Image (tube, rainbow, N blue to C red; front, side, top):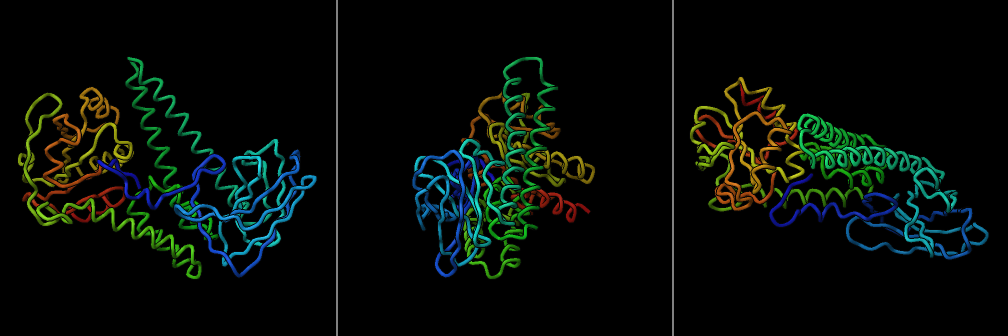
Length: 393
């Protein structure tokens, strides 16, 4: 769930994640009660200390549960945990470590210090095989998106590549959407609670309306897991806090659902003055965005799809850009195939609409009915389509 915020993104408090191996990891566990053992064999490693660490969701630092000295590549460690959680083996002379889930005991671990790739180290248990499969899939998709981004950035510095750039940008957005869909499906179907929490750390770009459904489902699917309950509570608290900060009708004097939409006049790409009131008689989605806002650009294909689907049902869109650079604004309009009316004063967050509508994060939108009243705000992803479907009869 991403927004380009004026000051900070409150959801960062929820998606606090540790950098372990190569990627992003969210963690949780409690200790005491049940004992588990890790029996390890590491090739090509000199004798040294190895530590068993318990990892926690949020900002709490890892806690060392046990330590041992590796002798001729072998070691044994023991830990205690109330339930399944995420742990790490960390060598004294290596900066990173080896992640695992305590889903059985003993857990046999093998590795070769010369190969610490995802495929190298092996924890022999069902949950850890699932963890490795998830990491490999995330790594594969991440490399694809990184390659596409590098190709796009490289071509964007050269002239005469508009059509190629447009296709590359569309491909990249589709890759990002595919990744978000993969993560949300994984969270909603995985059979292990720790893997569900782990995958949640990759869901920042997922459709908020989807997350609102699947995160509470984790509690229903794993009713006795304390870590799941804690993660769900944190998610709901952060979501509620963000909603209160972003919804216009949560601030006195700022228009909300049921209020008349404040009129404004801004220039389009050609310098022609366009007023919101000129759209009266139509349903109009006022879409606040910017070319520099990654989440806005990621949402644009969804908005384009909604426009094409409903434009013949007395519906249109007015794009309001918080850009400052006209060339980048125009380039983004063309690249993202935004066929509706676009306006901006090129003053960034100094845009007059920011104060009128009281938002401090984009993408943001308000849906206005033909009489000029606000009937919905912050419609994104599938929620945008479903609301328009039931409204535009």
